[in-house]
Length: 490
Image 1: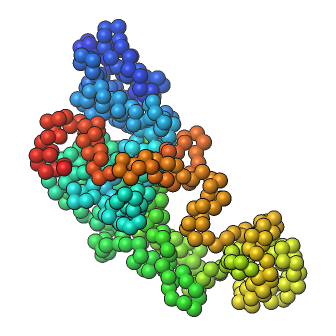
Image 2 (image 1 turned 60 degrees about the vertical axis):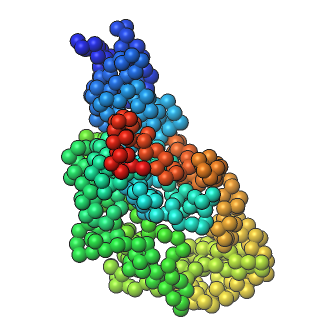
Image 3 (image 1 turned 180 degrees about the vertical axis):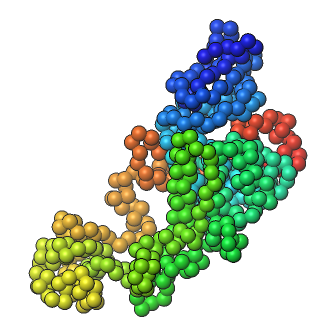
């Protein structure tokens, strides 16, 4: 660490900041470099007890702290806030995305599900909401807790909320300033909207060449369907998923949850992580896009391959299976349960060791998987007759002892109070500002070296508007007042 001719402390090779303010012999303060990586320089100077950032750093990649220092003109409280947010002294210090900032222009499910996963990995996600009530899911109630939508509370955990009116020039300018400081920007407007707002990829890249810019849409940003609205139920119908769901002789059925939305969010977060990894290897930022329709057809997996490669239109199998039998829901003496025998060995163990009916093995109608598929109804009738003799708990125990996957068919309430659920520690209690203590699901990920962030409650509407504008965009009191006078913030 050195002090230049102007008396300014200059930190060289910054990138991994451990975040301790130190005093130079000359009385200058600076941020100590605890593990020097990178080549950026970030000068500070003493301002009567505060520290001012004189230059804005650029992202550098290493194993400890990733991200950018606050913009030029920030005083010490902003520096300390940034270091705290990066995990330099807090619980998220070792999180995989600690120090990364994500600017989130998404609503409803696919986009928020993407940014929720990034937040779980330690990123600081700033949710930009419109002044007319914000994300639509805030009004998806009931169910609700103290007027707060449980839908919104779930998918927006670990985020901050800032309200900006992007129809105002001042709101657009503030958003672009925030984008200039972000590592990632995610949006799910219809193609063309971000361009009209001056926040398209080219505009953001001009002020932030390293940005990873992710667009989520119904049908992609190009082609004749680009401007068509895309919603999960419609996509499930169009991509073939509904044709695969339901009883063989029944109607097409939609999957009960918005699974295309959720999977699109997962694909988007995967793409963002890949783009950040590429940038960290010396590459630039880049734009990526994911569409609901493309995700939906990818969810057809082997059924898509069967049609594209062999021209086979797949049948609906209901609760059964089109590649293995026996598989599906069966009736015990006291209720339904599900089991799957994926191969001949499992089928033989079922008949001999579990049911005590070796004759089912010797029956030529059931000798192979292909024959069991052909005679599925006859086989299911025979199995249900045997299974009706005992309670399902006994059958499930026997099946598991024989190495055959089996489990109860549960309602949601039963699943979320089951021994399996409780044993996994999937719930954390977090204090919401208005709704009080809330049980929040933890991420299903388990990372030993870079732990997942503990769930924090979803933000109230605009809860962090001023703090975000101050800490990330460099607005002072006068700037905040000007934004409010212009109607750009509440």
